[in-house]
Length: 233
Image (cartoon, rainbow, N blue to C red; front, side):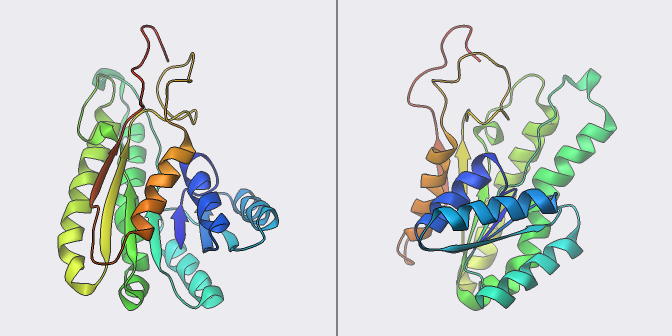
């Protein structure tokens, strides 16, 4: 199984849950040392499962193809892609630079496309699963989120379209859409106690992966059980 953006936050929580369940996991991030250290820590902490960590940038298709080749060479197959890599650059449109816009769209949306294309042959061969990590921001816009909202609205449409493309090839596609997660990624500060934890999102991903092959939970919206407190982060 391959997790992009797997060295921290939601991606690392997903990797931890899958390795603990006995999966063999490739986690990728932009920094080779961080990826290798994260994979080594996961493998050392679990009596089952296996993990390798490699540098790969979702904006660079060649690096993604190389990572997939390394994973299939070690594990023999690829059963799932969790397209998690993402960045956030929050600013009102009058302050949103072209560089920030491009980084968000190229990472969050085009990066998912590159990841799917890199993994697709291996996933068709295994009858695998693609899980895109979207956001409730992909259905509900907010002020200051022009780039982020656009990327996540696009990711939802991308996921639903490729689900239609790939279901007859035996590849299932699902989108998990969490609300505010206490990872340091979301907007604001203050008390994060009301927010989802990265492990909650990991459990939703695990649910998709262990669902019987005849069923497809194609979209999961995941909200904090509690409302955001007045003045909360």
